[in-house]
Length: 86
Image 1 (cartoon, one colour):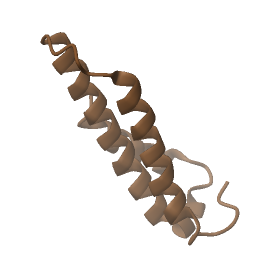
Image 2 (cartoon, one colour):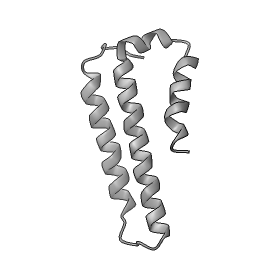
Image 3 (cartoon, one colour):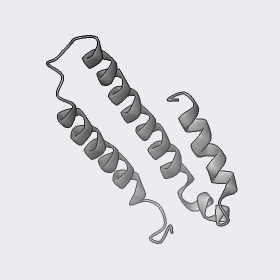
Image 4 (tube, helix red, strand yellow):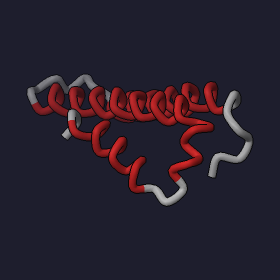
């Protein structure tokens, strides 16, 4: 599932009726796509470790920190794109 997610998001890009807008923020879209994939890989890895018996994993910290990192990364690059991307 994690491997197919970036490809699925890339396919949705071509199904969008306003796909011409991706020219203005294409870099932000790709960076956000990769950041979300890394976040999900981290979460799935932590779930696997927890189920293997490592009970010292605090999922709330990883999820909140990961979502915050994704928002910081994508927000950092959105400032250079067009003001209205939707």
